[in-house]
Image (cartoon, rainbow, N blue to C red; front, side, top):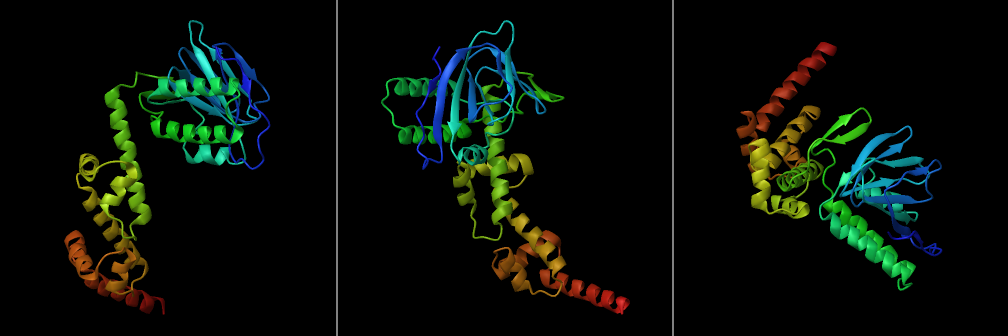
Length: 301
């Protein structure tokens, strides 16, 4: 076990700093007043339940992390036959919450991570460095920031292989390597689609998206084809055409060029693809919309 190790008074200029680090045998942990900083718990074996009054109760097993926000009452009760260690890292600083939130780690439930043994080793190494007094606060701030980023990158979606029961989460089956790879692909696909919806008006190539989600164009295309039956390029093109059609519905007197520029497409190419997708040219659609608008105006007058 690694005794509770508290760092010195942090420099006020540090937006993120290490507050404490250590491990303990699995035992009841009861903090009715919460903790002064964010606590990142790591379960190094065994199993138990975390309870946050008014928020819920979750089962936490080996290889998982769980973050509790400052000042939040919490309790951890290990299962009777559970044997293992519970590691903890206190993270403070004005930017601690925003960094953890942006990294997707403030989700109020335990989450499994791949390569857990590596993170446990990094935590114990950090403790030994502190124990030897060889690391300054500025250096540990950098180490903590990198640790948060690495955990976020290694996070496995917590709904994989789980079933919710009320406010509790119970593991249904172990997460296999194939499941992890599949969910990593799904996560990349979700990020790719989100990027397309955010930047459909920009000069965004599928290669840019693939680079952003850490996949090759070929692999990303396979994901799109598996889930949507089209390539990534076809998905993005259909998205742009659909957005253009919606824009024209709201701007019936707009020109074809304006519609094409709205979704970042060259005019002639836009006309061809629009006709292929909707069965008519955008110009014909504009004429039809104008006619409907005129009839509506006449009816109103």
